[in-house]
Image 1: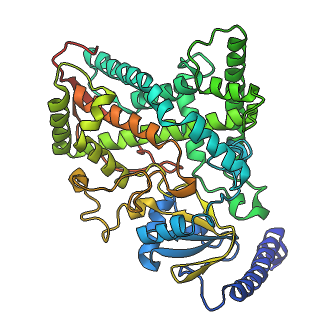
Image 2: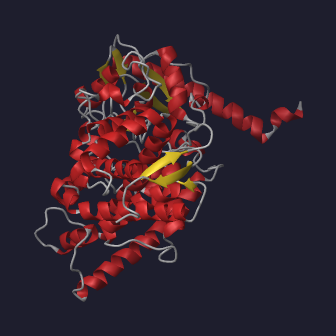
Image 3: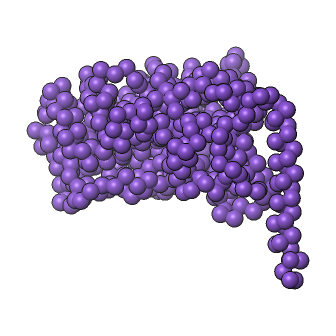
Length: 508
């Protein structure tokens, strides 16, 4: 029985003992605070880890299955963190509209610490005056409708470049192309030209393929389960190395951002900046003595990081899923192509000004967002005080997860929810801009993504151009396997065969 005296066994029993005391104290405290109302239903937590073991490799799917058992409002204890999961439009509305102010905070996390410049960005910053100023900076100075429209020529030019690269591949007699590569390069190039005024080749600043890999890395790391976020006493372990990888990624991007900002500062000194980009706008504010918001280098880095993470991977993932679903449903692609052909003809490519008349295409994109929301659990919210929701008591400092993925597949909300049917949106007022709680792809309320217009314009134009310029075919069936992260991209790239369908001999 000597094993009973081993350090490992002592540690386990100590943790169980501490957990028992913690649960006794917090249970009594919550009962005293909540009065007659109880916590929402949920599975019984284990000692120390709580319900962490139930999340699985794809948490949005695991939580959807648990929601089917416990209901649209469910309480979990993830480690020592009280967590509530909303998985119906009604519950999402309660949390994000009725109690929007209470749940406007963000919980501290390794992602915020290492990847969001110590939570100085817009997405991860705690709710308060700093966040309000940063949000105002983005909505009033950087992502206005006028500025979004001013980059129209950039989006059109980069989409043409993508089409030309695919055409050149098809002319070489390549049997199939990997669609992920040109789509990811498209979104990266658009974002880089917006904040930097140019794109980056493979040998510049670690750009190109390496850069895309690093963006994918930060999106993956933003969605992983870091044990220290839920069991602070075990944060030192980091046995999967997630925190180390976050620090490595942060170092790489810090070096890139410093060089980018230094280039802009030097260019401004030599007065060679004819066409200001977003970094130029931010530097103007940093140099202004009358600017309402004092912008520093760390603010510029944080905003660029937000633009990279929100603008590159999310748009690319949505475009790839849209192509997946249309390849799985050829009749949908054919109908969308016919609509574009009636509006545009087959002698030119699509312009952004054409999109307003492409109703069915917009339905295709909406249906893609329904089945494949870019962030299936949104970014977590946190309550600042106790409140009553849905007849239950929600304690302060409770983490909120809104399972947008589950809402989009709820058979009580959608007919044939697992089928890809863009027709369901014909004549429907439901959109993805946060007005309807059946579709919260970009969130809603105070914490809604400020770059909705930019993201939608890229997705609509890219999808329209891909199906208008090419016939597409694949060998065999395409799966819907997903990969875990803050976004949920396809687990494997699409390999498809393009053939030119316009009457012109090559892209303009």
